[in-house]
Image 1 (cartoon, each protein chain N blue to C red):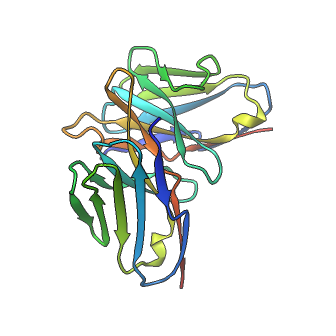
Image 2: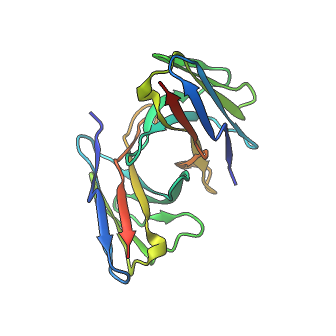
Length: 115
Length: 118
């Protein structure tokens, strides 16, 4: 099946540092999504990528869709305390009928920021 | 806009009882909603796709008779965990797909429901 390998599993950084995490897959994805989840909450969409090679920013966040369509990275610049949380990459699950339904998620990167 | 709510936010029940969780799209219509399950320190796993007016589609390994889904209107889907057992304790999250040009971008998640079965 479609699996997303996300790394690192966790990161301990100092406030103000830049953060980088990535996601890889053995199969091709046509869409890559990056979400952030706070404790006890549902995930919130940060960035959506639709084209191979696409580089998209959302404030201090930047994400890129790999040329091979099998990987993506998310960078956070100048981290602040509210960046703490779990970051997930996700992509559409392709059903047997060929249509895309729900999402498959990576295992998440737990970001911890030390003041 | 594009707010999705879930009720209840948390529920504790005895083993063997049934629990109903509601997912509502508050300011848009959703022909498709999705139900995910998340165990502690793990990722979200898709359980089923709920389509308004038709039967839900379940992912492999998810028992349709245990997790009953009803999508009776364009703004409401319900998930009923029947005869719940402690292993069903989890965080259940729904999402609603809003019709738009890029449908993947327009899938909005609810805040989740924490289920604890004693």
